[in-house]
Length: 454
Image 1 (cartoon, rainbow, N blue to C red):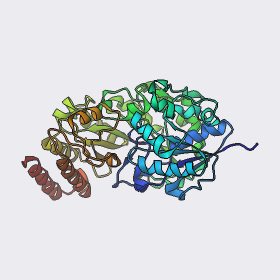
Image 2: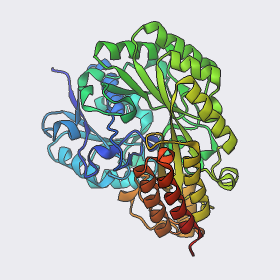
Image 3: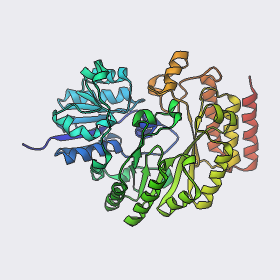
Image 4: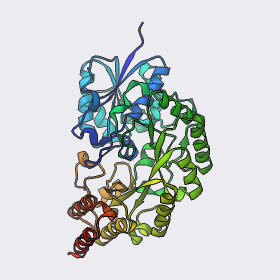
């Protein structure tokens, strides 16, 4: 009997290549103003596990290759993201109708949405991230496994287990199954890029609004350092020249980060890499160690340039002085930075938004060094429950992209958030704090008028 063939599908959607499925804790984001397009890492991880279990995996990114033949697999695993859920589920239903044993793969964590996916697609089950290691057993029918939602467990969630497996036993992602030349990350322009995780999870209180703890858990789970070195060697053999780490807090364990950098250096691959972390988990010595190991830049969450918002709403316990000092150190060490800012948290108003925009100008950030998202009440977060309770949400789930205004608060309307986004777009057009003095002066006058308007 021939091995079972499994199609792992990242379906084409109306968002096109703007949909980044691994962002927002795996729920996905869609920023129409970026040119980032990342490979389907979750599916490559699943493919590595399935191949080790004797299956024949085929990874299809329909944004790259076009539609997959629904009859080409005995089983199908289709990626489902939050904003594109209805489109993804409709595509999954086509594979169900073709007769394959089908599963959705998602980081969505709400029972009603699991029920909707199962009901509308007719699929056999919904695989959550904790099901990755058990995918082979699940497809073989020997066990439903942890993190596999079926019609039975969707009716009684107490039957569902959520244990994450030991990462040290997981096979390498099957990166050979796709062509990495099709993907792009602006900060690593001109490279064949891939994505990688050295760890999962985030224990910080910003989980009130941030979906990473929701999707990956609050405990930090790490791959062995030797495993990451092996992945770098795998990438080099495939002609990949750059890596984007998708860890929520890459430098959470300082000593482990040092050991990881040393292991990457020992591979001699010379791959450039990029990561995301927190400012309070970096220092000058660690930054220099990372740069020596090939790190070219980091993304850090700052959220707001307003002192009151930092103290009362952001939950990162950052002072603006700490942000300024970090930027000086990073630039001195030759590390590129990318600040992640966020508009619309409870307590935000026009004046705090104007202060954030002024902070970008004060720091001298150019348009490639900052990104400004808008608050999104991700289902499953405490913010979502609060927003439901207070009637703040007006936008449809299809607009939950991190860049559409879908809620207001008592202090800021949805319309005002949209106006603020236009001001952000203008700041990008003039090249942020690197704009000519006359342009900065005119822009400052505009945001001052907006902030003071009734």
